[in-house]
Image (cartoon, rainbow, N blue to C red):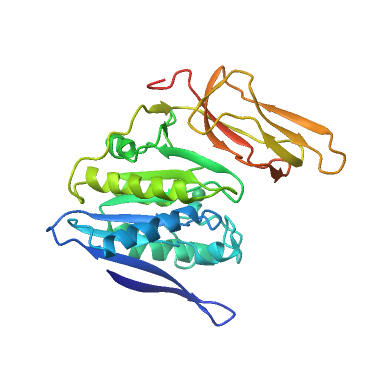
Length: 312
Ligand SMILES: [Zn+2]
């Protein structure tokens, strides 16, 4: 495997901001160039671990066709600070694509990623996870349903009206979809729980994507029952406190009105809020898997609506 160091800018500290792209050239012959990217949000380090384990498999001699490009840390400054946004300009890198060479630092970083990564690939996998304290498990269904399904997650998400004109404008996936290349955005893992099961699932999922693309030999593992939801509710606590979860595990059905969690005051120990599922039949997509502190307006839960979903 080769590693290319791509400079972005010299920081005020004198340190140079750069990104590293790993490239594995397959010995089985020509084929597509697949890009795997992680940590575009700095508080989502699980994808970087998936990249590490994938690179180890490739270095150990996993045979493949074409080329596999891995960008394990797309936003190094946010990754260092364990923050969603770039600390120097407080911008969300994943809303700035295709980037601007004359813009803020995050705009410039987006431009470098576009030029040196997104414009070099024929298929794209973008690895996201929950933040510091939330765990998530679903895949966006963007422009290649078979490929998205092959990752193996139980829940897939495609809004009926599509993603155009939504808050998803300016993501890395908008660049690759405009180029007409298959794009899969994965949300997996995160939170204050052991990440190893999610990293293992992530590596298996990416290998299945590589099989579906014909880059790795063989058929993808059959994914098991899957559901495509068209509507997701993000449920945010209105009170700060300790959130105690009663929600079913991720991927499981949650009945109407079911209690997802309770916010308890860490000062008086009073129950401040009861958080309930908004749908008559829902499926758990994002949750707190352990007792966490939350603030008002924080990410509490995400539930998919199973009414009108495909495969429900
Ligand atoms: Zn993210």
